[in-house]
Amino acid sequence: MDKIIMKTPLVEMDGDEMTRVIWKMIKDILLLPYIDLKTEYYDLGLEKRNETDDQITVDSAMATKKYGVAVKCATITPNAARMEEYTLKEMWKSPNGTIRAILDGTVFRTPIIVKGIRPFVPTWKKPITIARHAYGDIYRDSEMRVSAGSKAELLITKADGTQEKQLIHDFKGDGILLGMHNLDDSIRSFARACFAYALDLKQDLWFSSKDTISKQYDHRFKDIFQEIYDAEYKSQFEQAGIEYFYTLIDDAVARVIRSEGGFIWACKNYDGDVMSDMIATAFGSLGLMTSVLVSPDGVYEYEAAHGTVQRHYYKHLKGEKTSTNSMATLFAWTGALRKRGELDAIPALCSFADKLEQAAIQTIEDGVMTGDLKSLCTLPEKKVVDTQTFLEEIKARLEARL
Ligand code: NAP
Ligand code: MG
Image (cartoon, rainbow, N blue to C red; front, top):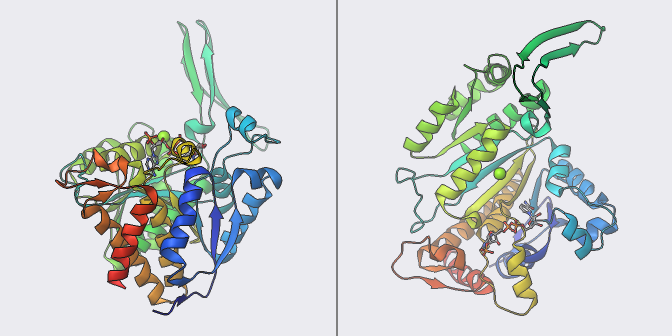
């Protein structure tokens, strides 16, 4: 078979620890033999970020804006322990945060569905994708403890100097107080990213909040979604045969549990934080959770939802065999290659991505899996293999499909 030729490079963001090891294995075993892989390479490994004062992260995000599609390996977000381990000049910010801020994106998380790994909710047949608004609310709040006898008020000083005041509470006893905000522009970007991604996947979009109680704040989210839908997306949704609807978060929770899956659920920041962990856990394993950052102007960055799997990496460094699940990292690659194939009209690349995903799922369904899946899997015959053997098992099944 001739290697598949690419037109535009993928932005390749390499990362850290065990996922960096897996990254190279995936390329060597499953990609380079079949694709004339064109990438613009950015090393987001912590050493390189430190050496470049984190400029490399900014550069990789700018390149993603330019080319439209990126694939990212998991990276270390430094903490005090990492400062010492890597003798860092500074406690560099989370690369994902930096990239998200530059692309103004929304993160969508979708589980990979495999027979034998049954969701805890028996009605779920298709994946549920969570879209979490990544700005504001309690993540950028101001909080205070308030002592008895205090009067708390909301005070706005407008551009023209005039003020608006509202009583929050007259504290008879000690208590607590929280102020939070969000921005119309950020909510609009979030809404557009959700609508664009729903059209891309051809799946219904749900958005939920608590507008019956929060009549200004949550209601503003609901209104912005509806305005943008009506003005920009309604006819495209109708053409694609998909639906947008808003519902209260409590109703959404009940519907999600009774559903078959196969839709996108957009959530406010805190709701998305909680619900994405619920969905991930209920579907199975962190090793089967994919993630894509979508910007409102249609730029895509694919990655795994998990981290660098540090504990496995230290085993690897000691020369021990690991059994780390490479599915989510592999699906980051296939997602990015398929998107590149769609944008550049290279059907062979899309088809390769499909076949590689099928081969990977088949491998697990044949009972060959990594250690994390063993206890979750209901198949009668299970064989746990090491990180590299798992990829070679996928390769054998891929070759049968090519
Ligand atoms: P983690 O890397 O996701 O791993 C947590 C635990 O989950 C692992 O120890 C492992 O459990 C299990 N696990 C996760 N992914 C797995 C996989 N693919 N296969 C098998 N088991 C898997 O989270 P962490 O240990 O909290 O964080 C490690 C580093 O990753 C941190 O420096 C953090 O900053 C970074 N991080 C990066 C991203 C990102 O780049 N998107 C996201 C999260 C965290 P067992 O040890 O029990 O086997
Ligand atoms: Mg969380």
